[in-house]
Image (tube, rainbow, N blue to C red; front, side):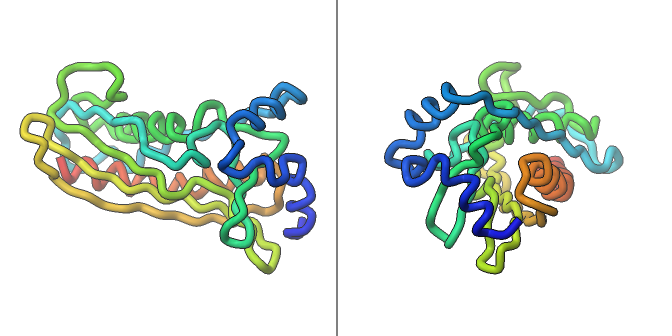
Amino acid sequence: MTANILTRRIALLGATSLLSGCGALGSLNTAAQPLDTYDLAPAAGSTSGPRSAAKLLIARPEASAALATDRIMVRSDGATITYLPDARWADEAPLVMQALLVRSIAGTGRIGYVGRSEGGPVPDAALLVRMDAFEVVVAPGGEVRVHVEIDLTVVNDRDQRVLGRQSFAQVANATNDSPPAITAAFQAALNVLLPSAAEWILQTL
């Protein structure tokens, strides 16, 4: 579909989906109609390479108010933010990213322990995460793509020394503007980004 058609589809939320009222109005929209829920899968990458006995806890990712929701964010003309009216993530986007990082790193089998910062053993290191983008982008020509970008910082838990910092970004095109196609594009982007991030984290510990 073209950008105009996508704009009409997300116009159900209209200007009320802007930051000034996205939380309350999103709840009203949810109450008005059921939303299809979509989840994303981890991507572990290589199981061979350096191994670490370290215990790593991953903090809840920092994100803007527009991202800190379970709605699927859409950005058009560079500044306008709306949400897909008929779909949502299985959890708030920062929690989705946190879980994907935990499962992708654990899936390598190359670390002693990895889990959320909300629980677990006393860690050797902490991973701080900032989500800079987790969104659908409507290009001027009508193309629909997704953009995922995170900034990672590994910190030694004992002395708070920064062990490393790195940003990871990936873009993938969606075949159309339907929620399944958009979710597939997110998965394609994450299938590249998550293994790269996991490998860097393991090399940094």
